[in-house]
Length: 373
Image (tube, rainbow, N blue to C red; front, side, top):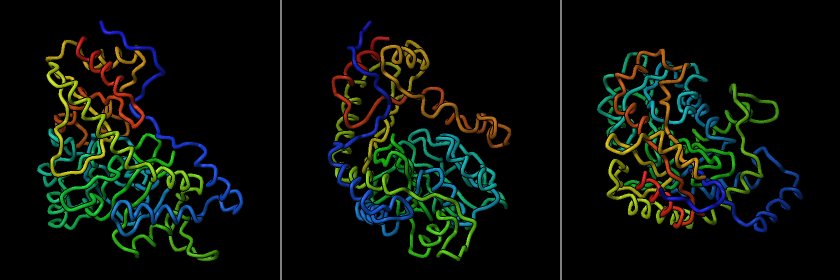
């Protein structure tokens, strides 16, 4: 049996940390100005820098992606039922519950693991007001098919784009689609501010409403126009984001190289499959999921434990399905017989470590371990 070399624990994702010496000038400026939060100069600068980098016109920063999801739904005044995916992180559906909205789960496409457009129409009822798909693992949804359905039924589309920083399709930024796109800048993401998030907005009026909602509804010191929340990003997080943005192209190139190495090393291993690459998209390689099929010599969970025992910490991401958790499993749409593709993926998925500082030699070790169960 292959023995992995001794090294610190290897996790699925680890935050990219620029040199501390480069962060010190930002800290000194924050300390000198005494402007720590409430949309200070670094906050404003990061919003504009992200718009320039991502190729979008308007973007509102948030303290985290979950608050951004909750606020996105508020800003569009979404009510009733929202069609979404069971194959995601729980924040996707939790944001609906926090707004008093009923999630309606539909199955996913077996090739992309994104919401399957062919399943959406059958789930639409008179109470349906929106669709909330997820660009799973950073792979773009079928945005044209989803938009066509939304237009036919007069539904809003809010994309959970937590994984999709920098992703493009044939028309440019993936964030150009839908009514709003919500990003996460959590420490595990491709681009991070330790904790953070954002909403990409189609116009200045929408951004203004979102900016009010993320700051308690304040317009000025004495005027409150909405029941807002405290969702503001601090100057510390914004400064870190500005520093991270200097290195993002380098980080994306590293992820691409690592993903290619995984594909090459895992090719031909019986019972192990990878998601197909999207030829028309610019990917960010946010995650590297593999799927442990029935003809692999051991189970997915056995392989998961074997890797953990050797200091490699993969993640069964997403397992369980959102629809399996207690607050959702009583919904008619949560029944597993309605979600066979999602259920199968959840039982077989294993996300392997991928982050810019990961050594190619570790990928060789992980692949050898998978090849010799």
